[in-house]
Image 1 (cartoon, rainbow, N blue to C red):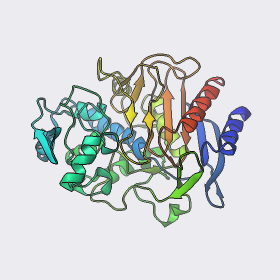
Image 2 (cartoon, rainbow, N blue to C red):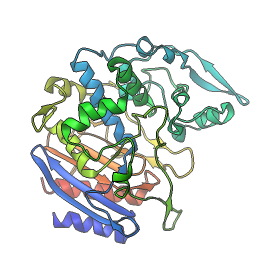
Image 3 (cartoon, helix red, strand yellow):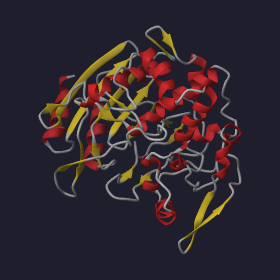
Length: 382
């Protein structure tokens, strides 16, 4: 394990990340924890460092949805507009006539399954130039601006026809609110964070946690890191279940241990084991998770997690369909957040891990090399 700590230190000394917090666990508990670098000026990174976890929020939305499935309140084959009639506003963007968007009705109805598997046809504007243009010419807000209207992106494909990464989990959050009656932040606190003892997993950073919050940095082209302001909107119209949460490495790893223990942790069962097994199956058939290519600024480069490996999608996670030599096994699940917070869990090997910083761009090749190095080192110890 000392070698893993050396890898973290070497990554910071080489300028491959501003700081890193990494942890591993199995079904019984935390097995290793380490950190290197400063989370912000004068404050070393450690287990208490608070991260903007962005798309790692999606896993929480998936768990919340499965809890409603277990209670008989949600069927994933249900058409979204039967729960949320306003969803019928959503159309497919086919292109432009000059600056006029060409929109049509979708040929298939979007279901909850489509939202959970990123096969709904939604896509983020940061990885799709047409959606960037759409927002620009219409003046409509982006999802991360915070208003309700930010949910009403057009689709870029008919539901069920391709894997495309977008705002589906935000709509899942709205579905949970409509069915349960509580706001999604209250649901998550009362049904997930509280029962699991996640005291540092938050929708808002109040004074008691502010000192723990890390600085965000961007790597200048061929240069050093530059501190920037970057984060989810404060007290938005609705909390994005695609990216609103803050958490620590330890809290998130505790959450992942739920999956290594069949849906139960520390005497608290959130999901039936049978439901969890079904949740982690391939739910997109012959479709595959594809490379994400940045369309704007410093948000990301080309993001290809585990290049050369066949990847599908479960009800909430990227799923690896092949063993990766010296790394995770087939059936493992994982994902990341845009500020380079990464996780995976491998139920075959009984290991879960996080490797987290707060930097742009996502897909930075130097950081990706360090992430792979970390994963290989973890598997040499299990």
